[in-house]
Every structure is written in C-alpha cells, then in structure tokens.
Length: 469
Image 1 (cartoon, rainbow, N blue to C red):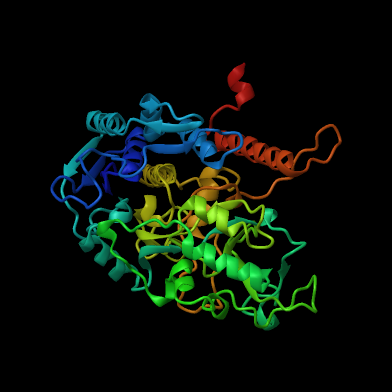
Image 2 (cartoon, helix red, strand yellow):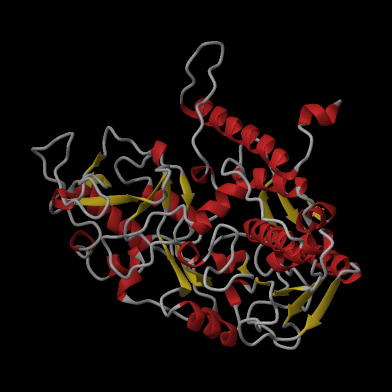
C-alpha cells in the first residue's frame, strides 16, 4: 500500500483542515503555502488559517441554525479548525467568534508539530505535477494568477470565475403565493420547463417608483481597493441599473410583458420581480437579475417591500466581489475530484462555498476522501441529510442549470443553509398543527436531529443514546 504523501496547495482554513484530516488518518502530507514567499492583498501575516475578514464563525446553535449544525458535525469529525476555534473563543453571544491571532497561531503550531505533516513555504505556480498522484488545491478566493491560469487552461475558459455576481436567494416556503404566482414569460416552455418556471411578484406604479427610489438611496458596500470595479452589462448591480433611469428596471429584469396575474387577470402589473428555482430540491429561489452591492441590512429592508416577499427569509443575500471559484458541478465528481484528472481534488472557497466554516468543512471532506483513496478504500460520501452532505451536494450538483440564458453561469457560491437539506415534516405538538415561527423552529430541530444522528452513523460513532450509557 502506497504511503506517498498527499500534497495540499494552500494553507488557509480549507488546506489546514485537509492536511490535519489526512495526517490523522495516518497518511503523510506536504502542505504548500506561498506566504511569506509571496503575499496577497488581503493577508497580513504568514500564519496558517489566517482570518482575513471577520473573526466570527457565526451561530453556534446546532439545533436551529444550519452553520451551528455544521460546527457540531465538524467537531464529531475531529476538526482542527473547530478545536482551535473553541480554544480561542471570545464573547459573541450565541455566535462562535475567535481571537484571530491566537486561533491562527494554534492551527500553525498543531500542523507544524504533527509528525506526518511537512510544511513547505513556496508558491506552486501551476497545477500539481503528474507525480503528485494525490493532491488537493485549496487556494481560496485569492488564488495566485499563475495557478489560476493553469486551472483555467485545464478546465476551460468559462469554468473559472473571478467575481461573484450573486442575487439574493429566498426560502420558497416564506414566499406569499396568495400574492405571487407561477408563470414563465409568454408561458414559454424551456428545456425541462413547464411554462410555469418562475415565481412572479407584481408591483403597481406607486410601489415600483418607491422601490426604485429605495434602491438608489440605500446604503452600499464599497469594493476593496484591490478588487477593482468589475462591472459589465451582464452583471450590473440592480441599484446601478436603477441609477441609469427610473424606467430602466421595468425594461430590464422587472419587465412585466408576457405575464398575467393569476390572482387578478384583469389588472396588468406595472413591473414584476421574478424568482427562479435555484436548487434541485425546489426549496430555494433566486431573485432574477438582482445582484447588488446594497448592504445586507438594506437588502432585507428594501426587498421585503416587494409584494409577496414581506416575510421572506433569505438563504443568502446578494453581492458582487472578488472570488475565484470553479464551476464545480461540471468539473468535479461527488468526492471533489477533478473528473478529467483522477487524484486531483479541490477544496474550500475555490469550489464554490462561502464562509470560513463551510470552506473548512469542504477541506475536511477532501482530506478524508484523499486519505481513504491513499489507504485503498473507496471514499464514503456523507448522507445528503447531514450538513456535510447538503453542502457537498450543492457544490457537486444540487443546483439548477440555467438553460434559458445560454453562456450564463448558473452555479453560484453559497453558505450552508436549511434550503440545501432534503425537506422534513414538522412534528405535531400534542396533535396540534404548528404554524408560523413555531413550525419553522420545529422543522429545523427535526432537520438537525436527523443530521446529527446520520453524521454519527457515517463517522462510525455511537449514537447519542449509546454514548450516554
């Protein structure tokens, strides 16, 4: 059995976690990190797993929050990132926030001290050489230009994106279908469609004018100096379109033509916001053409003025920022392996996930998959019912292909959220039907309970009941 090392490119959260998982499985690792030989525009130190933005890992609630559930699953899987985070926690209410320097130093010390891990401070300018038969690319959103060029050449010109242009995504069950209706424009039946492939939210003239004014006046985030301003007509922020003239949006993404309000056919909408199914489960819908630089709180405030979205729960909010990532559903198999080159895996944000914890989780999975193969085993995929499995499924194929917009990338990065999980029925309380917030909380508890039980089973751990005995 070969014990040649597995090479990991990138010492961020994903690469560090992948290295730890591989080494803990008994397989040697060479971790390649280009800092300090070559710096980036965002990093300040040469520490591994440096947090370049927030110091928060977000909610630690494993019962009613999807990222909190992912925390719990990672702890079950022996995550280095979570153990270092727990050891260097700072007060943040229900969130897990960390002392960023102490956290990075702890991860660095652990990796440096592991007998099976070798850290090489060097830039890997291109894809791994052929004699690196097992390798993981975990270079994050700031992948060095040379490596990015090699990835583009190996995967195709349109398979690598350098900027997110992301519209908000809404949980379907929070859309008011007494106001909205299903219909494709002119009832057009596209590939795999039914003629009712969009959810339509109607506006009258007064609502539309107020909405445009709110977009123009809303607080925006600014590009970081090193990001530049990558606007082009295919992904203009919604507020930039609004600034070009009050009628621009209703002749663009909000045009009402070809649509008839199923609830009130005699009244023609002045403008229409359309949402398109975003995942195969049908639990998430994205707001078509609504990529935005509005600040997150402003997005929630402004977009909830849209008829039918007054109580919308957003799985993710919109944005436009630098983020190098590949078209993973097309390029990767379900074990994060490049289909065209067995043995080469990708992990972290470059695969199309968002957030510190999500990046580390995908690094954890890539490391476990690569180690299993090195040890002669077939990688065991996590169940779709777990946070691991739900996130992995989104990255490797859970999205909807945009057939009606040729050439447009339909796959977009996303945080873990409950819309990625297979649905579950809310348990009844003493024979009564739960409603509203109580129903939402009950469903989330059912999802997380199922997930943790299935994760324990996948990891070969005793159930909670067995562990308590």
